[in-house]
Image 1 (cartoon, rainbow, N blue to C red):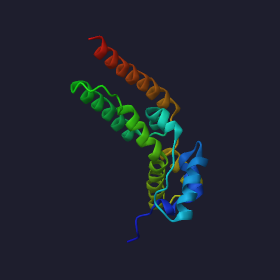
Image 2: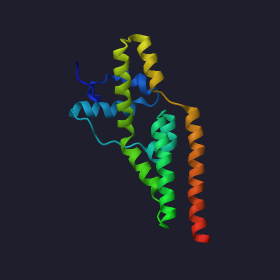
Image 3: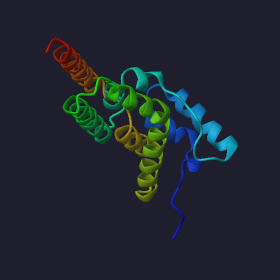
Length: 165
């Protein structure tokens, strides 16, 4: 039985096919990892920091998106119930995704490439498979942007409600 592949096994053309848009940032992190022979290297994503929910939806990371929304709402409720006057849940979530964004994508790319290898896909079939399992969702980004605005509005509502009462 062969070893489980790691990010160091990713080929540039596979990553490019998986990421689809703005692949250069991910290729730079991959090159840094391969050069250092490490599985993690610091990187930062401004898009994931400033608009974490939109970035997650844009990159089609639906499970991460649901977890981030649930965590954000849960932390906001805990802060509200405990009558805490700091509203940091958004910052914590944004910071987490900002420093892990590219590695999350690289990890998903490894999984998709592994599946493509198991299916013995090559050429255009392989590229189409990787595009389908990676890629981006413009519609998802718009919908999650509205959700992020609504959550921000709810947070402001909690703040002003607390101070108005």
